[in-house]
Image 1: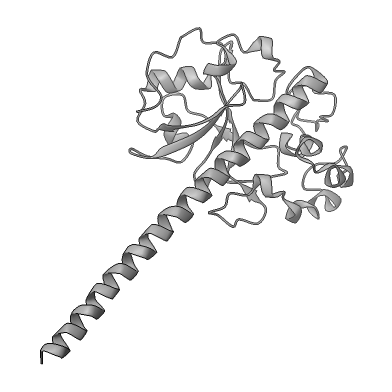
Image 2: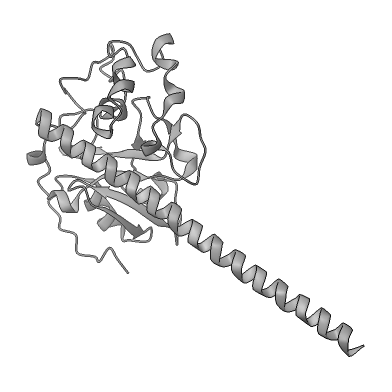
Length: 239
C-alpha cells in the first residue's frame, strides 16, 4: 500500500512539474510573440522615417506616390506605399497605383501581406492590427490622416505624438485598404478596441515603440494622439 501511495504521489508531483513547465513555456512564447510585435512596429516606424527622409513627408495627404479617387480618398493604403522600405519592392511593383485597393488586379495581391504587418498571435490572412491613429478637431490633427504631414507639422514633438497603434483584433483592417482607426478623443483606448487594465503597444513619431496602460488619463491620451494640441504629457506612461 505504501508503494502505491508513493507511486500516486510521484505521479501527482510529475503532473505539477508538467503543468509548471507548460506554464513557463507559455509565458516564454507569449513574451517572444510580444517582442516580435514590437519589432514589427519598429520596422514599420523605420520604414515611415525612411520614406519621410526620401520624400520629405509621410505617405499620406498629397504624397507624390499617393493617388486619389473622385471623393478625395487615397486609392491604396500607406502600408502599400512603404513596401519598398520594408524590403518588399518586388511586391510594390506589382500594384497598379492608379487603381483602387479593391480593383480586380490589386485585390489579387491582398493575400501577399508581408510578415511585418502580421501579428504573431493572430492569423487574419489579409488583415493587420497595425493601424494609424486618425483624429481631427478643428485645426488640431493626428500625425496621420488624409492630410499632409511633415515632421515640422508635429509641433508637440515627435517623441510625444503617437503615429500608429497595435489595435485589438476586432479592429483589424485589410492591409491594402486606405482605412485606419478613427479615434474618439474622449475614449482613445475604446477606439483602439481595449478596455480597463489592458496594455496597448504604440509607435511614436520618433520611431520608438512603447507599451502603455489603457487607463491613462483621458487628457493624456488626447495629447498623445494630437500632433498640435499644445499640451505637454504630464503623466508617466510607464508604471
